[in-house]
Length: 79
Image (cartoon, rainbow, N blue to C red):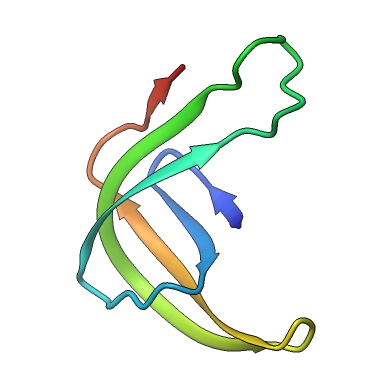
């Protein structure tokens, strides 16, 4: 899930293995109960992984990676 987001970057948790310096694309989906009705929009962006923090979640017990990404340009909105 996405923890923080700004115009210059985002911090999210993932079970995927990512490495610092890696280029990635992300899509952030709004919830299905979108207030405007119809299909909720998505934010789409590309950037470079700035930091990875490995952690373990107690319940359910899984390893997750806290991942900070620095965007190359503004996010785009896709409907």
